[in-house]
Image 1 (tube, helix red, strand yellow):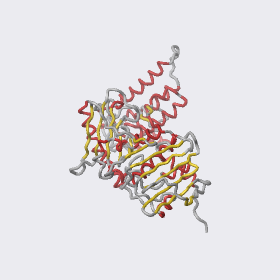
Image 2 (cartoon, rainbow, N blue to C red):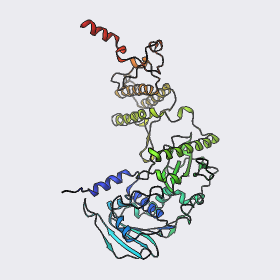
Image 3 (spheres, rainbow, N blue to C red):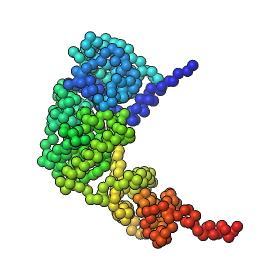
Image 4 (cartoon, rainbow, N blue to C red):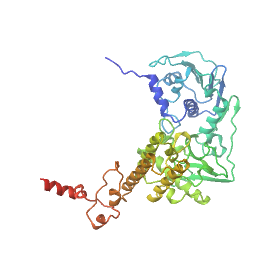
Length: 477
């Protein structure tokens, strides 16, 4: 009888690719999350470039011997979803990909044990009990990673501080102390090489608090703030960040589905502890389906309303044409963005039609609920401006790139009208050759359909679209 084997190296590489950030950043945040879930009040990071090691020590609850033994199993965890940041039992295992050794020491009551773990082959990651190195004094857990690369970012103090501030911003902001006191009653202190990270409160002239109360609760279910400055913020400060139990999950405006008139000048942070139960495996997003998804979407809608009211008070509400497009149109926008990216390889003029943001995000700069003529005018103007920059005064014949652009734009606008239910028979006959648009749903034969006006009802069967073909077929028979 055979048994199922696991290619451990391949599995860990797939898990690494599932996380949004760099591998070193993921390992650091996972260790920090485990320390927070254990109830730690002091978490110390110590990097030693000479020994190629980084040591993280916390004063949490620690582990018993059997718990430390289970710690080495993939996807093994005694945590309950929603009671902390971690729940899957896979994040810290990624350290095996870049480390020669992972030393774990824990102390809880009379139990004081340690283990050494490393990757021996693609299928084997053996570990063994070792004498404790004395990293933990009274209670807690210590993890020492000995990395293979002496230039690893984990050995850089600037990288450590920047990552911790970016991912655990609420823990370093005194404005959230009272709100997080239910989960962290004694607070959390973070030290890097013996220096405690300073805690700062946002101090900007335009500072607006945000409070979200769900189901008529007296206490707010979410707490945060919005800020507005006169200069452009850095990429790490732009947009509204959403966190749960002190861990920032998303940042920017994309997750919120709205963008102010000056997005580079507005930032903020909102903490929602109840969304810990809605986290995805990589803790980089929230579940959008099922009961947990409904919880996230309810909070998202409430946050949208609160943010929209504040933006309106500041006069930063975007025009109606710049609002998010209807849900049924978004797949068409994504398809057009992918087409433009592929064509940009052969036709560089198309590259500017897709805006690129930090983190690899891309957004097609097209109007949302505006008219189709505005969409066509915008893209045509962009292409014309780029073409005008080329010095070809004698060239009058449209290039292949321009012809391809015009075909794609016309085809996309026709798909857009089909999705909105505003297409006309004139649009159908004037669609570009080679169009990938499906045959639109036909409507009841009426004077409106024959006159070419907008159709919003089920239309003609397919045979009515081609009456001469039916007659020619009858004559030939």
